[in-house]
Image 1 (cartoon, rainbow, N blue to C red):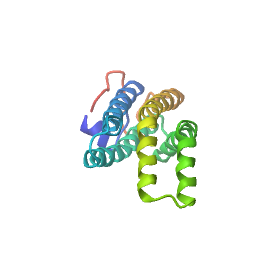
Image 2: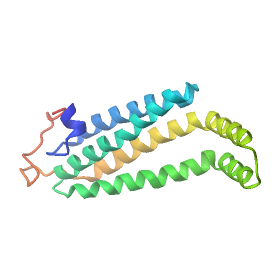
Image 3: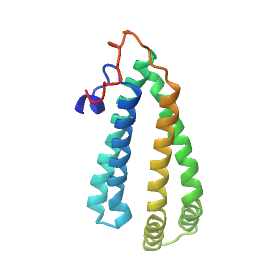
Length: 169
């Protein structure tokens, strides 16, 4: 599994990609639990750093999947940018009002304690919906883009042909 999620060399087929994507989505949801459960800030910070590190794993998965289709690994930017745009829209819908309230309070000279209380309330009310939205968006984009990448059924410049038996290498 280390090679699947950490090394961008080689190719992976559609099913191996989706298995890796599901692992990353579940891991990200688990790492979002400290914010949802209101655990101490130190725990949430550590989980956030680890969650941020999963970006590399997503890049690796996408690069290998595009390599399987004979495409440049740089194509991985397409699903990643799509995810960011869709998630920003989801964030705006889910947390936009609370976020704007907090920003307006900041501009109106609210005390740091008032801003901190507003931030805690916003986090408490949006953590679960944003975690679910992130997981759903991740899965939808992984499924959609994965289905659009056509497998090259021969060796290519990125490595030997993958088979349906190729899973975690």
